[in-house]
Structure formats: C-alpha cells, structure tokens
Length: 439
Image (cartoon, rainbow, N blue to C red; front, side, top):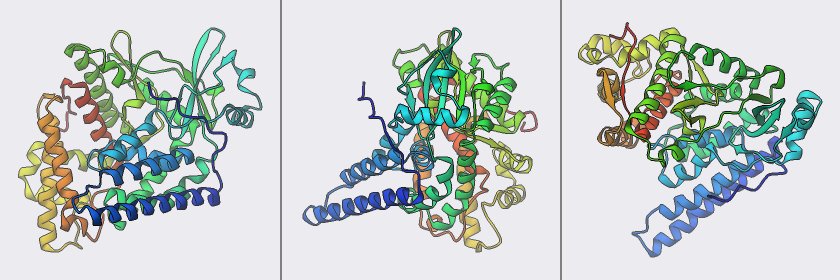
C-alpha cells in the first residue's frame, strides 16, 4: 500500500498566493530543463526520461497543494495516452484517488459556513480523516440513525479560483499538450464552464438524481441515494456504497463473463445517456466507479455532466455512421458543420484535414459498425494511439491557423476515449447497441 498523503492545514486561496505557487513551479521546471541540457552536452544520447520524471514530480506536488481546477486539468490529461509522456500520466493519475487531503479543522469550517453546525452535530459519527481525496473535494464516512453516508466536502477557494487558475496553467498546457494557442483557447472556455459547474454541488445533486433515476432500468448498474437536506453548494451527502475500484477488482482475476457483464452495463449506461437523455456523465475515469458484490457497477460521482446540443449531436454521430465515409458531399457538409474544415482553409489544407479526420472517424467508429466488439483487442488500441501520436506531431496539423472541431466535441471525445479505455482494461466483449436513426 502507498503511504497515506499528508494532510494539508492550508490551501492557497488568494490570486497572489496561487500565482506565486505557479511562478515557483515554473522556475523549478525551467531549472530542470537547464540541468537536462547541461547533461546532454556531456552525453548527447541522453533521453528526456529523467527530465519528464522531475517535471512531473514538481508540477504534481504544486498542483496537489493548490487543488481545484489546475489539478483537475492534470487529471483529465492523464486519461489520454496520446497527450502526455508516461511520467506525467502516472503522476497526474494520482489526482483521481490520492491527492493530499484537507485537515479536519478546515472541513469543520466548511460545515459551519454551509449549515451553521459541525459534522458531529449533523451526524452520529463522522471520520476526521478523509477516506478519499481528489482534485475538487474529498470524501468522509459518516453515520446517522443506522445509515452509512459518503460526505463529499469541497476544498476552500476552488470555485473562486477556476478562471485565474486556468489562465495560469496555460503555459504548462502549451508545453505539455503540444497544442497551439488558438486550439487551446478554443477549448478553454468549454473546460472553464464545466469546471465551474463541477464546483456547484447543488447542481451536481440535481443532475445525479435525474440521471440515476433515468438509468435505473439498466441491468447490473447501481447508484447511491442523495440527501439534499444534508447537502449544500459545497457539501454532498449520499449513501455509502461498499465495493472496490476497478483496478482492485481486476486483481481478483474475475471471469470473462463477469468482465463482460460490467462492460455491458457501462456501455448501456453511456448509450442511454448520450442517445436518449442528451446529457452524459463526461468524466469516465476508473475512480468514479466501483464494483460491488453480485457483480454490479456503481456510479459514485456526477460532478462533470455534458449537456449535448441537438444539432451537434446529429452531426457528430452522423459522422460515425459507416456509410457516410463513402459520400463526399455529405462528408464535406458534416466536416464544415462540425468545424473540422472551413472556408479559411486552402485547397491543400482541406484535402489534408478531410483525409486525417476520415481516418480518425473510421477508427473511432469501429465499435459502432458491428453488433458486438471485443475491447480486449490491443491491436485496435495500438492503432488508435499511433494515429493520435502521428497526427499530433504532423507539421500541417500543428501549424493550423485555427482550432479543429466543435468545442462541444471536447467532452464527448473525452467521454468515449475514457469509456473505450475502461472497456479495454476490463478486456470486455460486448454487444454494441446503436440508436435506431443511426442504422
């Protein structure tokens, strides 16, 4: 077991304090680059492995102390194998489960602001140490009248610092994401909006109840009950659900039948949200799910929900239809509608980007083109990651004068990449349902 992260007694909340932390981290990263290039003069064959490891350590240490949106962005980036070198992925992934927790006096202060009462006044028992700490908040276990609850407490200053944090994280993002400024700025507004929503716990409770109820018919799926009277803008109280995270469950060597059962529940959950509800749990990292006895999948966090506009939905999923790749006129219309190409592009750029996105769509749409799909097919994922890596390094793509793709696609792409990744970890073979209009 890894060492338990040390509790924090203070989180920098003012813009000056947080900016100072970012500047200090930037100086450390700059120093790491200087050391790397000095060593490289002596040993020209030196790789960047040590540089990446040192930078990942320094950046994560800083972000985990600041918490909030900057740490959340790091967590988001760790989910995509094409985005970051392995050292960053491994370190930033810790934000899903084991960020340094907040000390108990700060938790009590949050309760007093929200309810005018301490946790001990509202519950019969309340753990003084967090049982789980992530980027936006941490979870405590509580009991009241024989019931067991999970109580999520938001870190101080998170909501107020979203915009300023994202401005400060830009220099790291440019370098780490290998993305031009136009492309990054195009998506930052969408990221900022989602992060602001994620700090509104009343909205999270409302959406959690709506989606849980709408998906309650799906077999082998479970949701906690939420308690609005014991929740506020900064605190959420829900049922405590027993279970283990995906990684721990897989270590028990479950049968292929059970892997398929969990994978099918996951696929049906996302299928119903996207195609029926037009709103989707857009944060499918393993930390948001647990596996329960009886082989059930429990969804324990609805902080990030993407509402899908109807016009975007039709265009996006029309592109994934197998036969659309054979129709140039329809493909051209959809590419323009989804902002993959535009009138600003030269003829050569239009040809290039059409070919790139045709290749991407053909590959991403594969699970939709058959009635069943084996997500244990590592060759498919190797092909997917290789394509992303090749495109991200392509000179024409990097020098593009505009961002490519509707901003609405950011969280939908993230949702499907996350879903595919979990299904691959499960080695699941599933029935891939599609909406009627799609057929």
